[in-house]
Each structure stands twice: as structure tokens, then as C-alpha cells.
Length: 373
Image (cartoon, rainbow, N blue to C red; front, side, top):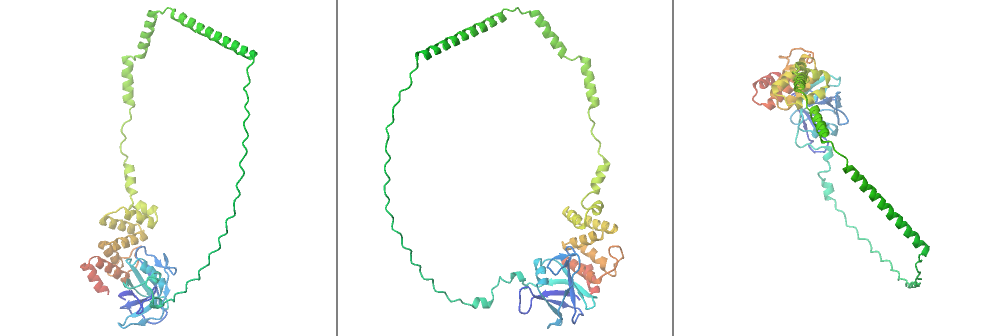
């Protein structure tokens, strides 16, 4: 088969479409199909998600359309997941009743397909033609009678009780005499404290000061604080000898840093496939270096990394990666290896078509497609 197209039904219905097999020799009942996306090589599951294990969908009996192609009607289990990312590249593989593969090809999505989730966006004719008769307005509810206000009796004014004036108690003659004695004693104590302070200050001023002794003490302190010249020189020499020398670069650290680059072999051995691919592709390596990473992965039998990098680069417009991936499956250019033990003409056609989509004038892709088809 040369091509697979997913087209809308003659009477379009959301969530339904027909798989059209162009150029294949498949007929009858008991046919099944699995769908694989090339972004991460995962397979479509019956719950609409993508998983790492193949899942086959049973197809109804194939019908022949006006162009002589075989068709099968599919529902939203296949239509809706493919319409979620219409720009992705997906491959369909068909199997006979005995489970043998009959062929594979890339799926091309038609523009008029409608997902089941968009079924409410376009109203049906029956819904638009239905006219509802207006319902009569409800009868007005009579207002409830307002109760008459009850008269409010005025509250009695409080009685004002005149305040009784009281005279302050008068101090007795005995209390006044006591306070007089307390004031006299306090004044006497203050006089005694002032006299004692004045006497102490006058005695301090009368002490003789030996100026010569003070001068000698000042000179001794200055001489003790100044370091000797020889000691200063020795200190400077010891400081120079003990000063840290600049560290020489460690060649081993540089080698380890290069080996731990995002696309290095060390990262391949330490990380999982998806983690490595995300880190390597995020490093924005040049095309030539990414092909070198793929070759290194093939040499060290990191097959999943090599296949995923081939697909990632090819689907992002790298024609060298698309041609290189196609050669791995091309029967005339295939060389058996741990990652690509057998050729596969259908897969080679798919990647040659991908390369031709990047560069329509590419001679190698056109010549190999003509031979393989």
C-alpha cells in the first residue's frame, strides 16, 4: 500500500471517519490495524492514550469506494486522538485475520474531519427548526396587607436626685507638725551630702603630680608598641612564604566536565532514554554533532536513543537525519546491526517520503521511492 487517508463520511458525523487504503491488496473481514506516532514511537490505545505496547483495533468488513480503494469506517477511538495533534506523523499497520502484517503506510488526515468533542459547535437542522410556543405569564400575586402600626407609649422621664455636697476632711494640728519634722530632716541630709562631695573634690586637687614619672611611663609605652626592624623583616618574609600559590588547572576535572556534557556517552549510560533526549535536544547542538551523537549511540547499542533521535531530527526538518534513518531500513543499503537487524521496505518508504517533504527536489529520496514503490 502506498498511502492511508482518514476522510470524513459522505454524511459527516462528529467522531466518525473512514480509513481509505490506497494502492493495497487487502480485502475481506477480520482486518485489524495499529497506529504508531513517530514523535516517541508510542502506540494508540483503546482509551485514547498513547502507550509503549502495540494495540490493534478490529475493523469492520472493508468496502470498495468509487475509486476502487478499500475503506473501513472507524469511530472516535481513532478519530479524536489523531485530531488532537493533526500535524503529527502517524503510521498505520494492517493485519490479516491470522495476525500477519499486510502492509503499512503513513496516515494523512483530511481537513473536513470533526472530532466527537466538537459535536456541539454546529447546531443541527432539527434543533434550529423547532419553535417553542411561549408560555403564559404567571398570575400576579396579590400584595400582603400591611399591618397597622401600634401606638408607642412614651417612657416616663427619670427623676433627678440632687447631689449632696460633702466637705473635705480638715487636717489635724498633729498631722501638720509631723510633716514639718520630715521636711527639716530631709533638708539636713541634703546639706550633709553636699558638704561631703565638696570635701572629696578638694582633697583630689591637692595631690601632687610627678611629671617626670608620667613622662617616662609614656615613653616606655611608645617603645613597647613599636616593633623592631629585624622582627618586621622576618614577619614580612614569613608572610610572603606562606601566601597561597595560584592553583593549577586540573586536567582531570576538565575531562570529567566534557564527558558529562548533555549529549555525551556518559549521560547515555546514566540516564533514561527520554531524559537523555530531552537534555540533549535542549542543548541546541548543530546538525552534524547530532548525527555524531546518533552514530555513537548505535556504536554502543543504545538503540532506543538512536531511533528516537533519528525520528526527532527528521520530523523537525533535518533531511540528513531522515535520509540516514531511511537507509537503515532500505533493503539495498541495509547492513545488519544490533539496533537494525533486518530491513523494512515500508518503513524506508515512510522516511524517504519524510525527506522528500523537507526537500521535494532531493534526488536520493526520489530515486529510492521510485525503486521501492
